[in-house]
Image (cartoon, rainbow, N blue to C red; front, side):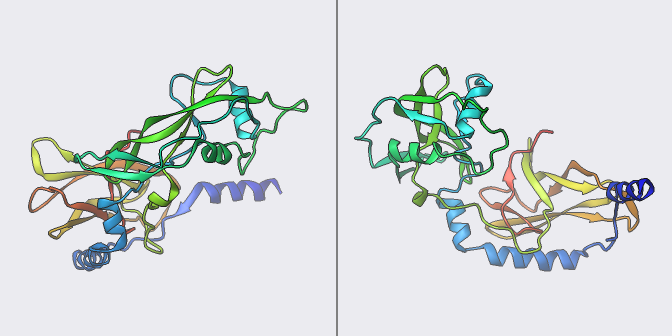
Length: 286
């Protein structure tokens, strides 16, 4: 049995890098053209450019980022041990303005403080740490006010309306974004079976024709460069990778590489050839 377990551990540690086929330049161009044609003018395209598409969780059961809250506070919130100790605002506005980075303004519908409270006061779907036998300490809500918090979207980082709840004995406010779900469009789904080629990108200072691409690769992969397919509205990118065809550690590494465009990116979207969805600007620091 011990020998069998050791063998299983070795199998899990070493992953077979059985793929070794590289996508030819013609194969990449065909794939990129297909991705561009599918995206251009689609509902996802319109929403990404003109709608409200969050790139992060809008309401991750979070507190205002002042400093960490005590452990009992998070445990009580996670288990849904909330109590109203005062009436919530009843006359909140039905809509509010959201200013986009390009200067344009959109009116978005809002939920009431009572609706927000009803949503976040429920226990989490997955409770990892149950309340102790004598119960969690109740979180007493003594008031709420409408404020703003930053949110990353497909059109850049904006400030969105949010309900800020005051909890007795807790310095931080409990935050719940007030934008109604009807105003929000979900992030576009990847193409079925698509493997992410490029995870993020950024512009290269003083080199307007170049993009810096961040990507993931296997420990035994060989990298042969980056490629780009361009149209008037889109740029589709990938990284030319080749597997070893042998056995190697199942380790995902990250790196950056530049790709040269025929003209500066401008306001064109960058799409990943593997998934068919936009690549977000801003490299992930690891």
